[in-house]
Image (cartoon, rainbow, N blue to C red; front, side):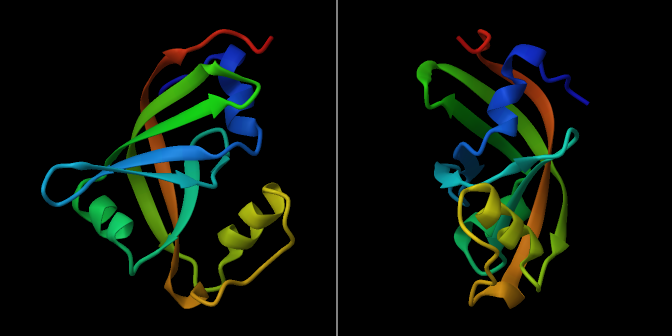
Length: 133
């Protein structure tokens, strides 16, 4: 497992949007803002199994994740990683947890039956890894 330096762990622990980069079928990048949660081993995302991003991940499990410090946009963390596993989440438990993390209440979205929980294992890091000011 790639060690996350102490000086940037706050970027994983705070409810900040992450930009998730995947690879489209033609080889071009697709980058989307995403809610996430870090459990100390995996970066977790929720998504549905009916969208292009899911098909991208199923075909090419390598991803890039960028997280910018909203208080200092020159401070950021880029994680490169691989999908470790994708779990069905038909009750949208992860979606509800993320909704609460990002300031909403527990919610079950209308697409709950199509929901999956995506675990990304970091394999490399880069960025401007200065400590938080």
